[in-house]
Length: 294
Image (cartoon, rainbow, N blue to C red; front, side, top):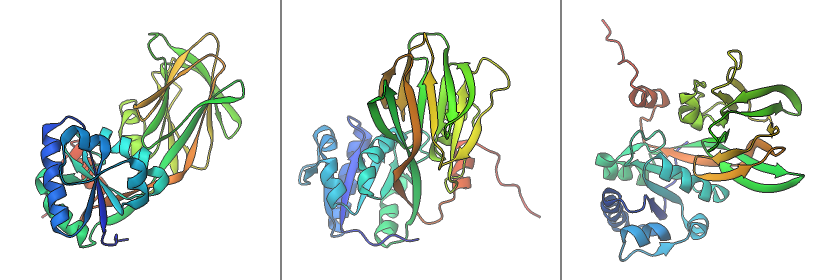
């Protein structure tokens, strides 16, 4: 599915990065010269400077922009994605980070990529998010969205925690471990991958449930439907931390329940022509080269 030619584009960048500032100014000028209205996210504008371009809140971007271009790494992309998810604004990533699993356009090809984008040659792909809440005594104390993962971990205590795992109301097991990761297909190549979780293709409707350093050899990662609800119950006398995409955190106490389900919102990624998920994995994970033929 190709994306229609945009009229209003928003730029979001990593704060206090000279490389990002240079790219943002170049990109803003290019888009304006192509006849687009360009908005610069207000904190980005305050940090990198974008004279001549109106600063805009995420709310305004969500309501007005046809797309948002994220300049930076995956962390910048994750933060912007969560803020813009309720508005269904499509996202394009320009990679100025390290791995760049979600930022498809290389900095050196940025303007060529924008030419394809404006010509409608980018392809739209929907990605799921997780909605998670921490409940204490029947009251919700925290709710957040996550594009990559929701993690309950031992936090700063330095010792394992113990919790119950339930899926769709069915008790699965009690686990003693450093924690548990619930990852989307997008997040399956992030923290969950380092914990030996499965790589899930983005087209799959699935959630990976991945134990962190379990105290037992038989506790393995499992993959469940994205229609399922995962619930972790933290047992006495343990406290823990809950992280949403590694960027938002919440203290959890003994007896708290972490409930994770697929969010009603989705995030639209816009990929450049020729994008291949498996080619991206080969590059980022340094898999072997394509074998020679003949």
